[in-house]
Length: 163
Image 1 (tube, one colour):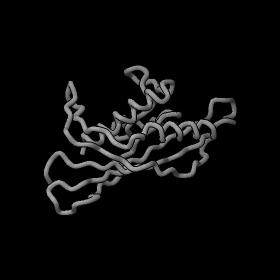
Image 2 (cartoon, helix red, strand yellow):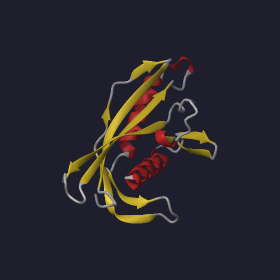
Image 3 (spheres, one colour):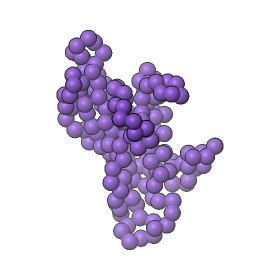
């Protein structure tokens, strides 16, 4: 399952670099595309940066082939993002969220990628694919002078290990 999660993150990160190279965040390692995985961040209580996509992994389920050695699995992934806009007073935060919506739609097409083992160099091709559903957007919510949005996709993959 970890290889599917790592591959999906890397695909989103790399495609965002192409779709909007200026959407970047500053980390201890320097600037990088504005995509983070919540479970990989320090639990220091600090808020995630605005104008960045934060992936939250949800429930794992069998999509097809219950009881088989290698069922098709699905894992929910929620993208959370927020923006205060680029102008003083945040008068354009709706436009900023809409731009992020469009970027997310763009990075999720096509909805498949070859699954790779990214924990080694060079990465190993695992000879299977991951696929994902179209994003399902929630209504934007206003909190602390920012607009917050969440969108969900289901990521489908076959496990590397027989179940």
